[in-house]
Length: 306
Image 1: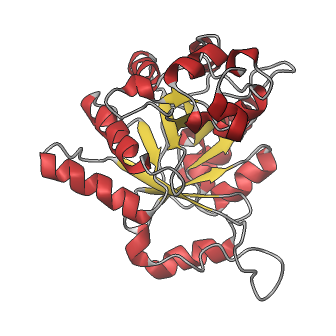
Image 2 (image 1 turned 30 degrees about the vertical axis):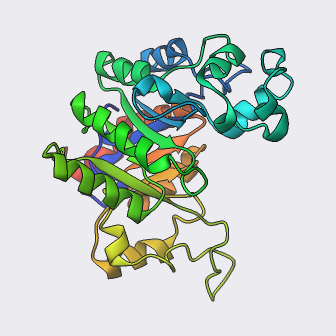
């Protein structure tokens, strides 16, 4: 599954091309299927096993000015905070002792705490250029809390465009205003990529409930103008319900849906039937096997005339 097509609303017609993204480079066989520190070797091994999509978090340390991609690192701030809570390497960091936030660490402290194993954004994008079919969905953390978020998101977008990776790197943008700012800045420089993929998450936390039951009405706050700022939408599994599909239809804005987190074949086929074209999963190998079985047993051929 190296590519996918969201043009069909029937999962049977796109099953062979569904994007399955490993959540945080998790999903390797064995007890340590997930890890706080994402390594190049881990991504390469999953790629060897057939995984082509990776949904990864990025953050920027205290001394990052956005001047170089080495100032962005791969890792989820909360997971790293838990892993480094008692790290001797950070014992002398006053900022770390005060708030335990990776955003308060310098680049040197980040590398020291990780033993130099933490991937930089530069190394990650270079890996995407080397490995055939590798697709990334990158979520730069800090939107809404960190004042330098917009500058770093713009820098990341420029790096993706510079490396000609706009078809294979999707960028999560925290808000419509952040997405519009990136598009405006790139357009002013005259280097706007033809298909820069910016997306936003749709959360069920805090969403109102539908009148007929307990499902969240995640589309309640969406408007056509906001949705048009994005190339894809990332609803949570609970948000991917009939109400969301209906709302997007009423807004007349077709967008690719990258649903998270989907860990079972039953959940996978349910969201595909509702229009999803890609999923984020802690069990990517399991879902890829389920998709191969769906293709092999004739369902794809019968539905699509293949």
